[in-house]
Image (tube, rainbow, N blue to C red; front, side):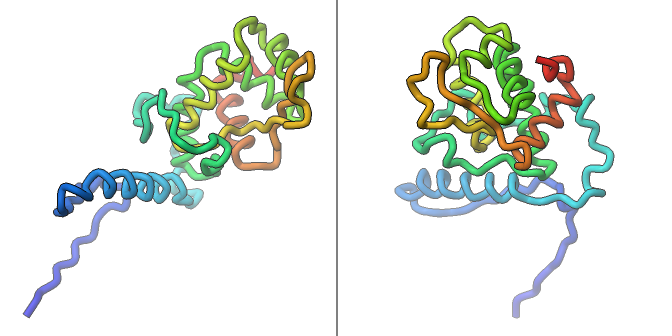
Length: 195
């Protein structure tokens, strides 16, 4: 006879899971399970009262640990990653990413958010007061989003590549991704949205 014991846990409690398996499959198991668990955690939708006390303006993003290191490149195209969604988990993760962008990266992102219908990359850099290499600056911004397993919130028009002022970049203001990033800037970096 088997007895089952049920223990009620706080749904936000941290649990340790242990699995026994042959060593030859352990690495593959860890890679696949890590991706699945990250997606489950990130995509969980919270009820409004779950984060009623969450103050975006004062939250310390150092409390967050990204699932990947900030230099993680992955094998897939960044835009093939899941989009930023409106869950509290994504709000916190995206806040961590924005806080960990350089000042230049935040300035470039703020110009895109403030001009969602699109600007050429050189015009974005000019408005942000940025004079460095544009591709590397956007790789840095996208890299922090990749560290949280999320796609960039902006899109490039492939037909505009090769233009003397750079590629046309835009955001879709009706998407969760754009709304989440905008809310972070409004709470933490409002002065940057004036560009």
